Length: 274
Image (cartoon, rainbow, N blue to C red):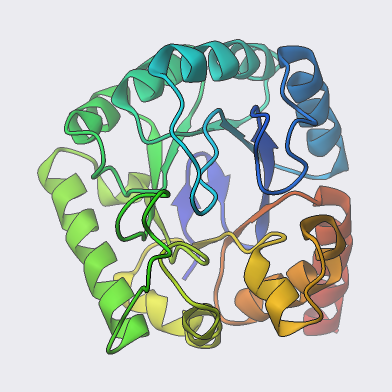
């Protein structure tokens, strides 16, 4: 099935470029920590083939400490405003309703929440009122606690079921299904084995009948499966995982390395259509 989501026809895999306006991101921390560098990165990603730019001001890596609301707002709103003002399609990566409200007012068309709009009690109503599309990501706990012995009896079934419950909560809050995408939350409250099982079984997410966003870029499980490489040396593994995800139905790939992903997708599509 071909979905229409956030102004994009998902008749082929789309690329979401990651712009972390933070000094402590797990990958390339600090490289886009100012408005100027973040905006420049966004422009370069768009030129390289990203159709969505995902701007975040709070690191959600395992064990990350939260930042103040004022600091998060100061980091992301000017970046969103500038990129959206240039006609680029911007997503705001946040758990906080106040940031959602300010970022969508500044031009963000998508709210990407690692807690699936469950962390902030005002998030559902804020997202509904904004008119923005939403990405509901699966996570248990918080970034501070999520990797403390995560356990599932059936990781695929439980993740799909918990996301289905969040979709229902969104619909009940007034967010139309056409505005919703889901993300299995690779690396969030998951072991390496959980991540691999989710990727292998990603086709089952079609049960939700919604677009699937996949975020594996440079994550630690890639290094652990390979040779414990640091984050910036996991590009090849990221591409391998993303192509496996696309083959199983992923619609949007959230990545740091846009040009490399665009090239890999071009080859994958050419082979598939030959």
